[in-house]
Length: 393
Image 1 (cartoon, rainbow, N blue to C red):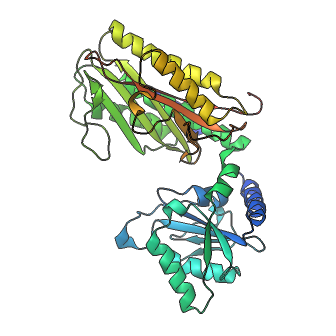
Image 2 (tube, rainbow, N blue to C red):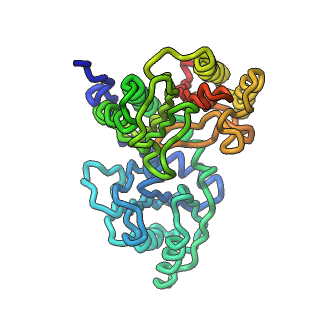
Image 3 (tube, helix red, strand yellow):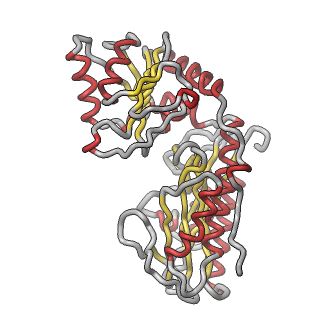
């Protein structure tokens, strides 16, 4: 019997973020918010896009986010420049799991936020909004309506993602340890799925055989994207999951497996490719190796002070010199070579428009989808997480 593949487990995980780190994050955020001429911050998060509340207050809703449930699936932190923060929750949370003393569980998060804004003295003031992408228009209108009904002055919400995100972009030592664990777990997870690939197995079989490795490490998938065949391509119908459960692998297929999701709160995002059941043909071996070489080339380009755009340009030069489109499969879709990793998939992207310099302590997932433009196989994928710290750069 084949020994099931294993990887790092929860027992191997580093300790969670200490409460004092959240206090420090909030104090640093207060300073940049004040410097921007704002009186406070409203950090908003959903079950699917929680980074602002999670980073500042270590909370993410676990409830489904759907219109019939109203404000369930959302939470918020009200952070005045002067005064104590208020965490507004859609579900009860044990006191030991809270990093904010004033945490309020409410039936309606928008009602609770309106009250918290009043209690913090922020009604009628200029307040930044972080995590704005998760704030629905109906929720903004509801908050404004609740304030008006209470006789409070109108609120001025100012986009603040660009103010807060640079603080969040550079990871602390504790975060880097958690991201290293997530990457190790993710690598073992993806490796287990690729190792299980053999003729006669289905794409669903690969997912089923890899999932125990991810779960044992403290993770859970957002999705698994699988392409297979000749040409190698996604065979699943549009939607989630992004693999064709009933598609049976055949000898000689090219396979690519892309998995991503949180591991103890911090993300892994990795992909691997292989030939099923036999050695790769010359054409397949060439593109498989070029994908590896490109990622190594991108990693070598990453160092503090280099812009994300410069790393992008190095990738374009590598591909075009070898006769590939400038962004491989991503051409005309999302012309990039990766993104930041942390509490989720984060920006900035490794793209031509991202002119910010890379800072020590950022974590990047570098990726490509490429392939020979012939029936030997249309696409192969390799993705690598590259941790950059002050001691390594």
